[in-house]
Amino acid sequence: MDAIVAEHLRKSFGPVTAVDDVSITIPEGSIYGFLGPNGAGKTTTIRMITGVLIPDAGSVQILGTDVQKEPLTAKLKLGVIPENSTVYSDLSAEQNLIISGKFYGMDRETIKERAGEILERLGLSARKDDYVRTFSKGMRQRISIGCAIVHSPPVLILDEPTTGLDVYSRRLVLDTIREMNQEGSTILLTTHNIEEANALCSMISVINRGRIVATESPERLKKTFDTSRYVEVAFDQGVEAGLFSAPGITRVEPWGDKWRIFTENPDAAVKYLAYLAEQEHLTIVSIATSNPTLEEAFVRLTGGA
Image 1 (cartoon, rainbow, N blue to C red):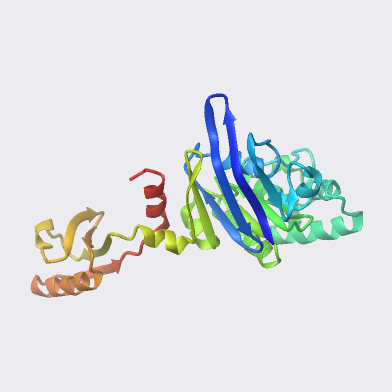
Image 2 (image 1 turned 90 degrees about the horizontal axis):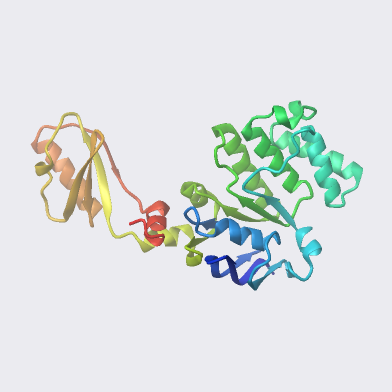
């Protein structure tokens, strides 16, 4: 069974069409990325999928349950981390988890045990009795995630979960996403961090101006726009751009203390640079070939290049 099936979603706000005929099918057990520039329609789509917004047209099913026809049943299958944290500042970390568990109908003993497990996982056991208002942004976000996963939801939806977090909190959040997926949760992740999506997701949909412009695996998206490769090289002394003249080299750019040699044949370019260094009595300090990036694909798809 597919975990999420959204079909032909539309949503307008006055004269602005925020989401225009968006369809997404997310297989059970996957980590699915949802990327797009600011204002592309990501958050509006997420709010329709979670039942916060009623679409002007289209439908959403969560594990076979229609979100509009059976909203309570559908939402009990979800864990949601919205763009802005929804934790209660005047409750402790543990109290936030307990009250969230009660919302999902869990019994007191199960909630208590589960809260302890989550606080340990998120590195907050020592702060379980402290008021959340005393927490940093990263710690608040960890509690927000804890509240969303307290009932071990089969579907977990995260809207920009690592934005603005410190390195430690970001790593904990990403590890938690992986662990929840390994334990059986399907993950829908919206993010601005393209490499984050590349590392986590098996499939990605890119939305731009309210419409889906691509749905593919990260590697296939990268290869779609793999039209130009480069070799990056640094020498032990300065050289002029005119030195790099050989068949197959299409463009040369300075890049900090290095040079980027654009070519359709990186292997031939590397061999040429080694020959050049020997002929000009240069020492190669570093050399690397590029790989196609998801960022390049994203920029091309959303009209940035």
